[in-house]
Amino acid sequence: MLKDFQRVGRELFLAGLNNSHSGNLSLRREDRIVITRKGSMLGCLEEKDLIETALTGNDENTNLASTEICVHRAIFQGTSALAIVHAHPVHAISLSLLADEIIPLDAEGAYLLDKIPVLDAKCAIGSPEVEEKIPALLRNHKIALVRGHGSFASGQTLEEAYHWTSCLENVCRIIYITRTLQKSY
Image (cartoon, rainbow, N blue to C red):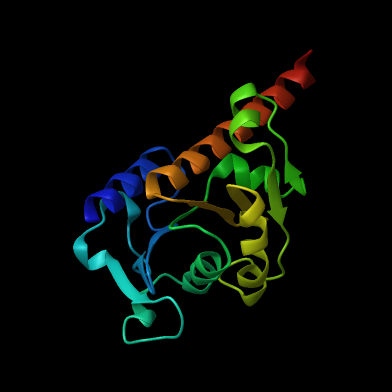
């Protein structure tokens, strides 16, 4: 399990989808969650950076978990997800400030993601509002954005959730480049 967290965390960092200490990863294990530690560096995770805690209710490890623990719990309880990747992809966040949903222009993006909803929340980071609203979006979409904050992708594995995150950023880069080129012509 550590190797999966390390591989995906490193890929997220190297791809520029998170800065040195941002984002988080989690896996559901029946009535438990394994989630990255608050303030961990996804690009170089160690065993101590994986926190196992309860799916419902708090225990002695909850305070060590990512500040997004409540959102991860809500997604696991409200969807069929077994893995979650929360990232801060720059192009996607930028577009989330301008749109209520992101519609891919490219064939692969449209095939894989269809459209990406953008959740507008007064408090975007680990808030009860995000916790309440994001599971419904992820029941119908592989990935969703919280305006100005970042993406939450759900999957059956960390690799699958990473795939949706990577695809989202490619979609948003293509949109940005296309809009920029349109202004030149």
